Image (cartoon, rainbow, N blue to C red; front, side):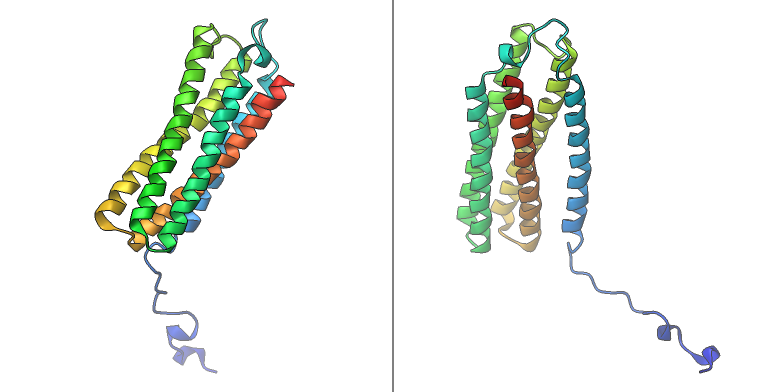
Length: 204
């Protein structure tokens, strides 16, 4: 075959592929979650190294209220279940039901934050702030970073509820709901690790 007479299309596609709107949103968000996972892995590693450095100060058994932490864990796990109901309502094209379950999820998220803020204030009142020891510095860094993520998730949740109320369950809002779902469940998984590694093992 005489290659000099061949058109460019014989070797590669001249026309670009058509990509649906938002086709790369999911993979892009997964990449973000993996980077977030690496950050939490570092924080867990730091706590693993510094978790026993009390500097002659209070340790987990002196500071943690396991019943309160268990209640807070229940709030976050329940919020994950209610978000699942919101996604089921979305699949059924039930805008009102989606908004209702998102609202309940928001309430559980805010309750989680309220308990966490109370815990931090109580520890600081006892003189167990992040500057007291390496253990407490690592504790506040890990748990506080997770709390900031939950706060951001609640803000995202409010924004998304406003968008759904104004525009309904359009494809863009469905993608946003799916991304927030991944983010919210990711925070649940991280918290299970915090509850087990920081609180339960610290109390043993």
